Amino acid sequence: MLMPVEDAQRQILSHVKAHGRVEQRPLTEAQDCLLAQTAEAADDIPPFSNTSMDGYAVRAQDVRGAGQEPVVLDVLGTVRAGHPSEETLKAGECFKIMTGAPVPAGADAVVPVEWTEALDSAHVRILRAVEPGAHLRFQGEDMRKGRAVLQAGTLLTPPMLGVLATLGLSRVKVAAPPRVAILSTGDELRDPDMPLEPGTIRNSNSYALFGAIRAAGGQPVLYPTAPDEPEAIRALFTKAAGECDLVVSSGGVSVGDYDFVKPVIESLGKLSLWRVNLKPGKPLAFGQVLGVPILGLPGNPVSALVTFELFVRPAIRTMLGDSRWQRPKLRLALASDFTEVTDRRQYVRCRLILDQGHLKLWPHTNQGSAVQTSWQDVDALMIIPENTGPYRAGDEVDALVLSTTHIHSQSS
Image (cartoon, rainbow, N blue to C red; front, top):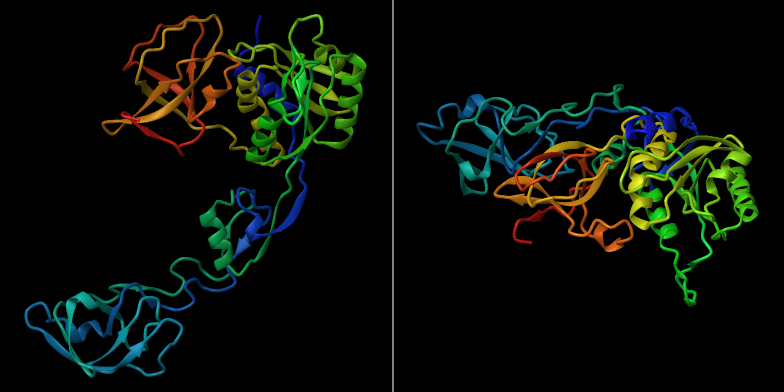
């Protein structure tokens, strides 16, 4: 009996632990890393009250009646960002003020410039009243001195890098990426720059997995291709397990006469699972070699990337200390028919499209496990339970959202 996907995920992750290694990086190299320290505010942010608008800093009580009849105020000068005023406003006075400039003492509101008429350089007519606090950003409104702003484990997205810069941190501690070995097996494989003899193909999996590992937060380590020989595979697995935190291979995990990955894992360590209720990607192997987790992925390019998404990516995120490795799962309507029925759970490559404001799934027309171009513009994997279907346009199904970068309109 084939193992369900969720059971396989749980079993794999039960053997994968956070490695706990930390490294320091400059902010320019910390994007998409997991923060490994608590980031505290050394000062209030903003460090002073300032204006969110160009306009005039006033005492709100001086312009209370401006809605019925304009109020004329004396303009003491202009306050620019980075140039605070040392004067204090008194009744009937104001300062012209630029966005981000410190609010002068005595002022408790700002009148936007659109609500005023300059009479001359020393006088302004206020046309609308404002309440105290209007158009002000107060000291400490965003962050308070001494308080934790970001916790360890925070994913460092571009906005979070901005927060760290605001806190005065140019370098931060982050979870070090796990070293992930990439091993492809097969007599037929050739590197991209090598000529193709009859019966040979390009080794695409190593490079696709290289990119997938890096995107998942790992440090990919590319090893030479292994021929379909048990001793060669055994030697390469042993070397990789001695140098990396996780070993990922592709090819050689099925039941053919020259599929040696499964027996090699068994001979070197322990095989924990083999074969999953999944299409594409049934012949998945997982075990340990020298105590290092090893995942043997299928050799078909699509199968390799689908199983990477379901099993390797969660392992890498777990090694980083990230428990939130699950992709968002949404229930969405189909934009076109999907008629294939199979006895295994199927993960179908789809685009996300917008149809009259509604997000829908558009399955790729060719779901073959060797059709690499079917990954183009894929945003989601639609989940089709075994022995169900056919599905028609408008039917709702679950989908794992991989990206929202290339959402298409119905006409694209």
